[in-house]
Length: 456
Ligand code: ADQ
Image 1: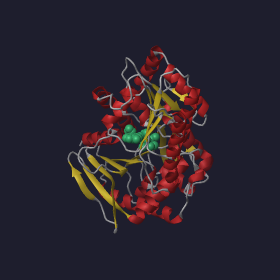
Image 2 (image 1 turned 120 degrees about the horizontal axis):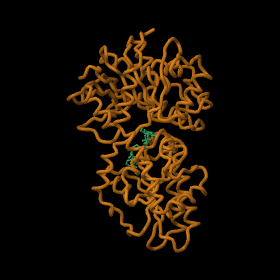
Image 3 (image 1 turned 45 degrees about the vertical axis):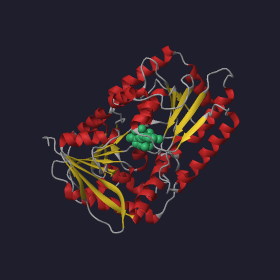
Image 4 (image 1 turned 30 degrees about the vertical axis):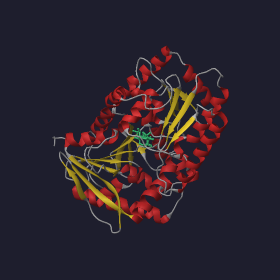
């Protein structure tokens, strides 16, 4: 532990076994090892009877997990968090499924987690709460008398102010946010949306140095674009076997890597690739699109149809363009280990990251980091990914305009080495400067420097 005080992290899921892997989780693990502290999250197990925190690991810091009951999992996680907040924050108010029991569970789980966290917190600790599952957590902690500095990071976009009108929690949201000392968002666009909404729909006012004041609390809203472990990815890609696919070396590979989610724009992407095939010159090298998209949140209704839609789209494009020795679209439903992904990224001539809305999108950054700088591939990136604010070396596309996306695929496949290198170098510089360690350090430094307030 350092003189800075312990770090207490709360995230929806906690890595339950051994040394964690994966960018964000590793970064939080390292920050906790450095400062000492506690990481609290759900174990992923569902139980009959509600229980308290249990220790799952102890080293330089403590990992504590709680289990959700089946009703909590359904109401808090599948229900309010993923059937109301996720769609609404991704500009899909048409998909929200408001359910009073789910909302009650969301508030009750936040209350219960706050009580467990309050038991653990010591004076001088700083708290870092992650994501949309825990919007009300600081407010609950304040009501339990916790006056420590509390920071919040939202990994997904902040909604458009007009969409917030559809949020059942709209009247509470201002108070929930102002209970934090620092609110970290991915992009400047998110910060503008948040400030615009606070000013239009609450009594919040600007105070000195960009801070906001609401309900006698002052807080700061700032962007902290999340990064990746650049060196780790580079090394994995250098070591990886890029002949893992059975594609002939001269065949172009166009790659997509996503969780299967309606926010990722997958149908538009397949349609664009179909249009590219229809405009492609007969003698141009063949290109195969490989889409890796393991299903997620299948218990949520809005997720059930996408899988079928994609399979049928891939089938019909292949039906039209496949030849005996060429399948234009391949679709993998299995998640891939990081090293395999790194090899695929390096082999791919083009990576399509074309969400309709996305907080940041780490795949965009991982793809760039995995390239061989002497012969890099091209990133095609949606304006609507948070990463678009940083990666202006990408070919930017509007994912709703599938003809322009098809043209961008052609442009990427025809791009000169000189242009590919220039674009890659500019993206690489940003990705290196704002890697995952930069992100954790920056956020924690900003949180540490917030004035400490008394609980009202
Ligand atoms: P996600 O929506 O999960 O995260 P993203 O940032 O693209 O989206 O991916 C997270 C990680 O999952 C990446 O490291 C990626 O390699 C891995 N991954 C994705 N698809 C995979 C697949 N098919 N197989 C194996 N691994 C896969 C949320 C927000 C994002 C934000 C992150 C971090 O929605 O916008 O960038 O949090 O803040």
